[in-house]
Image (cartoon, rainbow, N blue to C red; front, side, top):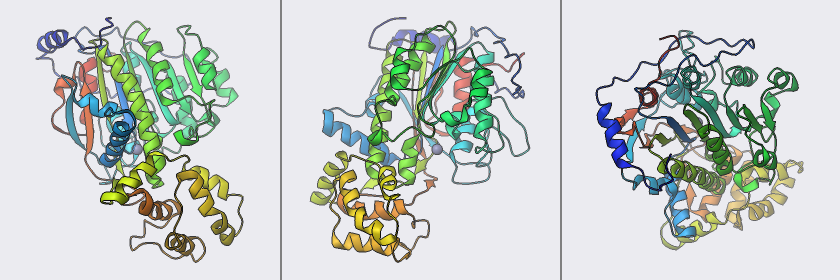
Length: 473
Ligand SMILES: [Zn+2]
C-alpha cells in the first residue's frame, strides 16, 4: 500500500492490459442458507485473476441530477471548491456513464428493485429484495464476495435493514420484512454494519451472535477497538436523523465511512463496502429542499473520504451512483429571487421532520396554522407571505387539493411548493422518477464502464473486477 495522493496510473495500465481477455464471470445463482446455525466459513481464496482487491460502492439514494447540482453549487459557494463528486470527474482515469433505471414490473423503480439490480444483476419487481418474480433467490453480492474470501460491509443513514443496504445481502419477498433482513445480516456475517434500525436487532438476536461488537453512539464507534471481529453499529431505533437535526451522539456518515474503511482495509483479502446516503431520498420525497442539500452535502463528505482512500492506492474500484432519481428538484427562479433563494437554502437549519415533530403538539388545523409560520421560519429562515399562508390554510384547514397533479397533495409537497417562492427550488412530485442517472467509477475495473448502461450492468462490473465465482465453482 502506498500513501501517495495520486493514483499509480502505470499499475492501472499493467493490470488492465494483463486482464484484457478475461471474461466477466457470471453472477452466482446458488441459494444461500438463512438458518442461524454454524456460519459458513469463506470457501474460496481471493482469485488471482481479479483486477480489484476492493470495491467501494457509494449510493446517494434518490439523487436527481438537480440534487447533485445543488450540492456542487453550495460547495463552491461555501468552500470555493467543487463538490467531491464533481472533482472526482476531473481525476485522470475516472469514467462516467448514464444509467437507465427500471424494475421488472415498473418503469419507475423503487429502491429494493434498483438495489437488487446491483445485488444480483437481475430486474425484479418493486418491493422485493433479491427475490425474482419466479421465486428464485440468487446469491446477493456481499454473500458471494464473502464466499470468495472478501470482507464485507454496509454503511447507511437509514435503518440498516432498509431496501438499499438489504439489496447487497438479503433475500426476502418484501422489503417490509426488516426483522428477517436483520437476521440475514447477522447470519451472513458481514464484517461491518453501521446505520440506524436498532429496533430490528433485539437482545435475542444479538445474544445468538455474541461475537459481534455492538456500538450505539458516535463516541462508542470512535472508541471501539478493532479486534478483527464483526462490528454492528446501530445509532437510532429508526432511520438516523437528518443531518440538519443530527444529535451529537449519532455519527456523521463521513465518520461511519472512515471507520468502515479502516476496519475493512486491515483485513487480509480485500473487501466490498456499500455506503448509502439514504436520507437524500427521504428529503426528496418530502420536497424538503434544505434537508435535501444537507443530506447530499453530508454524502459528498463521505464520498470525499472514499476518493481519498482510493487515490492512496491502486487496487480499489470506486463506484459512485444513485439507484433512481427522485422529485427532480431544481433552482428555477431567475436573477435576484433565485440568487437570494439559494443563499437562504444554504442557511437551512431544520428538516420538515422537525417541523412535523413540533406540530404534533398542536391539535386542530387552526392551531397548526397558528404555529406553522413560526416553525417554518425557525427551520428555514423563510418568513411566509400572506399568499403563502393562504395556500397552507387551503391545505391544512380547508383540505383542498393543492395542485392539478393529485400526487402533489401531502404536507411535504404543499410546504415545499410554498417555500419554492422563497428558496427558488421546486420539485416535480414527491415520487421517484424514471430519469437516467449518473455513474462515476475510478480504479481497476472501471475501464469496463460503458458510456450508457442499464443498472444491472453494475453487478457484472463488480463481479468482473473482483473475479467472483459462484460458491463451489
Ligand atoms: Zn432509492
